[in-house]
Length: 165
Length: 165
Image (tube, one colour):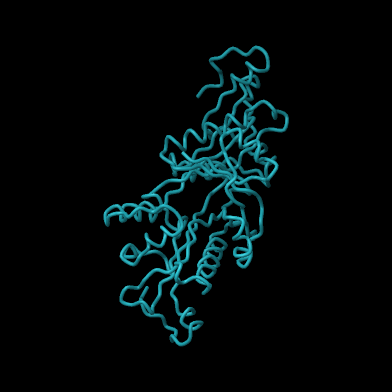
């Protein structure tokens, strides 16, 4: 991974095309990863060592847990993270020991919305799930995001229920 | 784990109270676990070695992956499995490195429905998630099951979207 895109940055469309979609790095704590997540839900800051511990826990899951980020090459040297999304792979007894991909924690920075970055992240997560042999990918969202995820091939399948402690 | 409940079996309510809720054992392949799952979704048979491999993959996740079963002591020596449900724990950067419990693959044998066995399994999974420090538990279901899961404290939060490969 580098901070330099191989594509030239010209107009906004080209610049967006040059945005790098890559796996989360531990150094992304310094590139606004947690403040970005805080735009989605409660995300208190983690110290560098807390972040490293969480990163290690998730990295231990290998390809069963993938966090992608969209990095803005135009924001060098800060290399600000503009979007993120997560995939984890669940193994089941169903479907002959099948695998299901779960997409979670998709967010685009408020100042970078409308540029298709979230869709690029989600489409790549779906590709990764397919490559991993998942028979489906699922996610939960608010009803107003149905059309957004339909652009990535998702169809409505049911309702999400939750218990909060 | 034993096949004998400590509670006496009298009328149906007491007999149901005596049903044992416990973690999946590898021997449950012989107790109808896969045919039970097949009542929920496609679940081809697995050979004993395939089942053992799948069991080992999931057991390696420790307390982050719990499959519960309801075993009927009245069906000894078969010890038929009447219901099952699964919890897996997802770790996040959100919520200070928080954990979310996902309930999956809940099913009750068609001949054992209406006895509250599925609710007992789900309530226990929710307790386990709480004990594990999850800040919430989520599941996806069809709209007609909203009221069923409301009995376990679940409220509707959103829509489930899916891509099938």
